[in-house]
Length: 295
Image 1 (cartoon, helix red, strand yellow):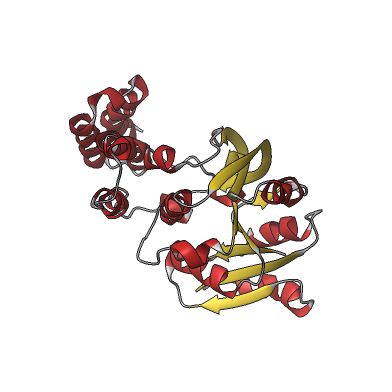
Image 2 (tube, rainbow, N blue to C red):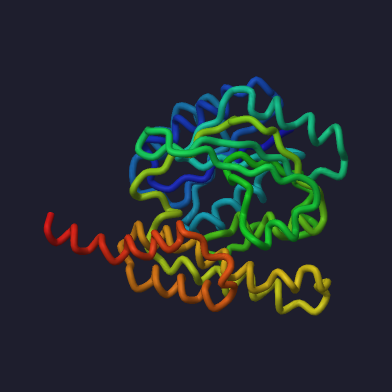
């Protein structure tokens, strides 16, 4: 059985779309677990019809954030596989039917993902996902290539590596995949099987310090004394990549000083990681305030 874990917080206008896309899966051996992470809107009322019809397992908890909600969903799930679905997002009907056979084909595969489209305010923005298969620890150290809302993993992995880290305020998925990647192979269905929908108030775009997770996750990895030399050589590039990733987030938050702080940290860590696109982001952060003032 596949446990579809939907985590939600104040998504009364979206959560039913996610639930319907889960229930519409052509792969029928499923349970749908909805973790309501302390919603204060009408999320519970929207879900009542599914609860009464026993179509979902509903669990309410005081707000713990994304990682705490996912950890709860994993703990109470009963399936052999766990599939993550954010309440902003939707799946295509054949998603699980396309993914589960890859686990059965290769017992060394512990995580299967797919491509997805990113929708910004209901308009297609870009395709997310990179062709990455096999043992991905070195690749994942350099950055997350797994679209979270497409991923399915063997639940038995949690016994080996632990659950989602509830101490992380963001990037809990990247941390989880990193830990998985030291034990199992990853596989990919190279098709678009989901839509990641981005709105102005998505939790992943809120304004807490984005780059704190670099210290928590990468420091934890590179403080280990059992890493081979081939991994240690990736250290500076790994830090630079993450700082550069966060520049765009800070640009969206109009945090010019943080954009440039990340730029210079990346420059210090690994100058060759900087591309023209990163320079463009840095320059945009200087220009935008003038347009806001004149507008």
